[in-house]
Image (cartoon, one colour):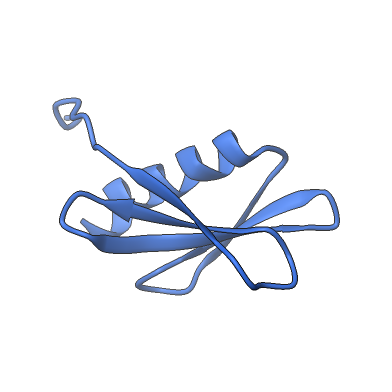
Length: 75
């Protein structure tokens, strides 16, 4: 059986002072679920809890990948 669909509110915060453009993905309880960096034209998302690495071609896809990973593995 599949889980009932659920909306997750998310904040995307840009982190200044890094060598590469970097964003932090945060859920409402102010818990960081991961960090996304743009490296060589691709977006590398690193999960917060397990430090798994996911690659995507766009920032939006990378955010969706992090949310999916969080919902399936870390929740």
